[in-house]
Image (tube, rainbow, N blue to C red; front, top):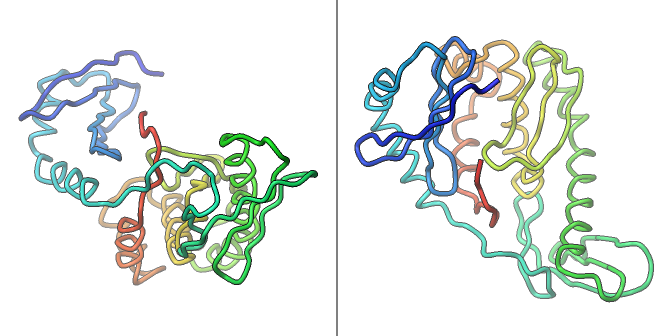
Length: 242
């Protein structure tokens, strides 16, 4: 439960502080513009948080510069001729209006055909495409879970998909549940696999410690290359607030 929500500025960087009943301080830098948020234990005062930010300034600025360099799609209008992504490839959208339920299919490995009832607006078209994206992503997950459970040595009780604005994935350790960002369906299958392994390893090590990185090296030796690949792909046009 959050008991306090305030803002300070450190070396010209606005910092949002959220104090919670937690043991350790966590600093996050979030897209699209590198906003900084700190989750701090209740007993830490602003000066302690300020010192923690100062110690991480180089890392924070590096993350912010990375977001600034990363390309971002313009707002999708959901009209014929637009570019949309699926499994790391770019497709041309072809919107066809016809009676019946919305339907999406891939044609000639180059076109995403979206069939919708006449008069369907942009939001309705986006919802139809998102529903198809969700089905495609969920269909690919079971096989990956079965394989990587054996490699990592964990048992996943549940894996769900949702839209997330600040993370590619997350996990609930007690419930052994993994959440995947719907946007992953647009990325290379290598990136999806990396996030699944990343979240599985978090069930063994909660934080990004040396032990976490050693486990990633052991389970997925090229994980750093996959992470870089994911970070270089275009971000969706979103209101990335949090």
